[in-house]
Image 1 (tube, rainbow, N blue to C red):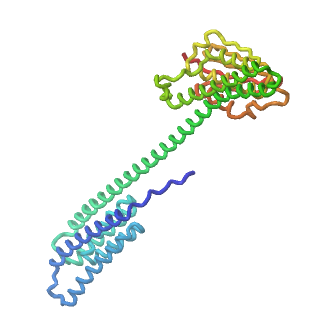
Image 2 (tube, rainbow, N blue to C red; image 1 turned 90 degrees about the vertical axis):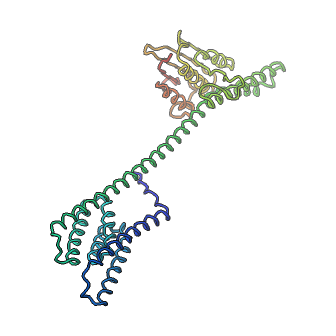
Length: 402
């Protein structure tokens, strides 16, 4: 399981400002409470020393409450109870106590909110009796006002907490979407690379194998050939190499523009890709190279859709290339049938050489895997194996599309 990465911390300037404005609000609220309450106290019987100690103690407790409040994220409940306790003996800490309770409510923990609210209610009532003993306001009225005020404070804190959770959820969702988009882009790039590799292998593998075959024959029989035969053989090699370059240009044109327009072509149109109707010409090329190929194409097979026809052509092309490479001189049978499904069944068989299983599924390279991928892309099936008689069979069933 992959661990979920924690969100990065906010910038230092933002954190400092978030702490500063809260301290400023607490100071304003504390000065307001200090200025409203102290003038109402009956200090006529107090000495100057007692009055000074009271004022200094009030301000000192308020400052301590502010300092403790700055550490609220490390221990929310403990800090809130400490600040509320200081507000019992300090009017200057009243604003800090309210902010601490709001901060505690943003965590949306029911038990902690209940404990903090109860502590603030009790300390508020105790402080009321200490500051204004024997006041004219009944206790039940003071309690009711305190409960309503605390409820408002808690509601504000819970709302802030919900908004923070929503914003964090949206940020995490956005980050998740970005990661998923990156994965999709990587996957698309991998598929595109596989597509390019498959097209290059299927097209150039066939042409270059013909070039290698003719060049090998020319090298082997060069001394016994007449000058005219040598020129003719060299011309075949040149023609096949030119055809390979042409096929390479066609493939690159299609890969650059999937819609079929070659941007390097001034006419704006790329040469058409081979289809099922081009299989006889492909077989003729193999025969010209010296292979013995028997080809049967069912009537109406060429009516298959362009995509299915192109895949069928590439399957035959790769199968002929494998047969020429792994079983030279062996007869090859190509059969293209139309099934009632409807579907196309492409079958290419050839006897293998004794001990050779180089183009079997278990030992094959990228060619057979590319053919299997072609069949899968159009929803078909593919198999390639060698039976007990040593006959290698490549068979693909491709759904019919007009």
